[in-house]
Image 1: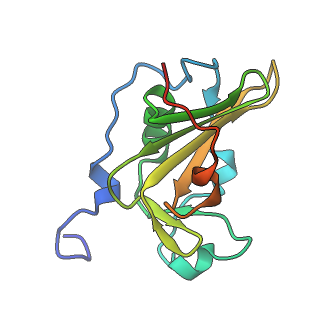
Image 2: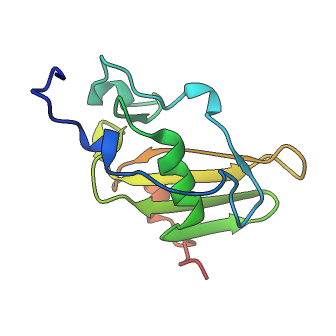
Length: 140
């Protein structure tokens, strides 16, 4: 039995994605964990994502699946290949914390030039200035 009375958290089960590979179909990028920079931990608190601290996923979040889903089926896109392309998707549930707030957006970027391109992401709060940028477009 889990510590929370047997109930699984949203982050553990709601975002299962079935894709045949983890390559971004638009850019040809492969997924990267980005060194676990945004991985959650059992002592995670909103306050640990304030200031210059990175956004964090909730413990148990299926990070690779969430980020791959965002790259494959984004709600918004911006940027230009081959420099950097960014993808965003509202996941309709709390993924983690960003700027001390609950984060329900999945933000993914594909970058790295022509040879070593990879994509990685993080949870993003709706108040994050990146979401307010005017150059987001809906994907074709």
